[in-house]
Image (tube, rainbow, N blue to C red; front, side, top):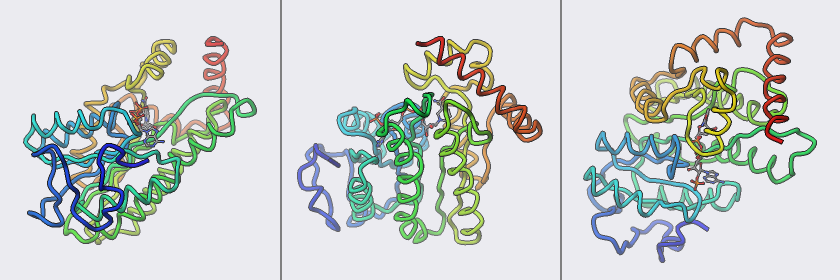
Length: 295
Ligand SMILES: NC(=O)c1ccc[n+]([C@@H]2O[C@H](COP(=O)([O-])OP(=O)(O)OC[C@H]3O[C@@H](n4cnc5c(N)ncnc54)[C@H](OP(=O)(O)O)[C@@H]3O)[C@@H](O)[C@H]2O)c1
């Protein structure tokens, strides 16, 4: 359920939102017309790094993540440390109703000129053994939510002279991978969707950038995997703070295609030039070995 901590928000479709904590945020549609950046998956990992980076640049932020994951505290800290305005919305994007509620809250109360579609999930599983919910959630979050949020926020973004969309894909966008199947396919969707939309919106004032991070130690699960992979895990490894900072720089320069770090660029070249029949079994074998070792 969105915004469970803030009574009154669910019913306030186009009304300003009431807050108990002074200074945390102002309703921009009714106050001074300041602009905001909306970040999905803002509570931790790369999304948190994006949020902190924007706050450091004195950009007001709207944070979205799953309920009960520290958003109020993060929001409070950011507004106190950086003198920016901040608000949050708790939503589970695997539930279709939550996307609509979040968009109503955001567009009903704020002027938004930056959208960072960061929320996403990954993982390695044998396809036949994967639970139905796991597959469904990954498709819903990585593809459906990103598409619908972009679609529904576009009129708001278009209403400003300069607006920016930054979608988070992955280096996995560039190759199919056995035992990951849905994840690279969903990130290839993000790549094609973003590049297509970028072309469609040329000259509109809204640019679309897509970033393809390599491995980042963002959470316990990913960190454990990266360590286990040894040398392979370290190829292209970057700090989320660096990825966030450089991606935002390049987003403001309206770059449509963002690959960071020379090892990731080399890896991209490898995936572009080595034929799938060589590359696919090689990468799949490595993931399979990793899965077997973790059993
Ligand atoms: N880490 C890597 O090595 C890596 C590499 C390439 C690409 N990426 C991409 O980078 C992005 C961020 O990854 P990360 O590693 O920072 O992930 P993370 O640490 O797992 O954080 C994911 C974020 O998404 C939010 N989220 C998860 N499920 C959600 C749902 N159903 N509804 C709403 N929000 C949800 C989480 O909210 P809660 O905190 O509330 O759970 C969290 O804020 C993802 O798109 C990922 O695919 C990551």
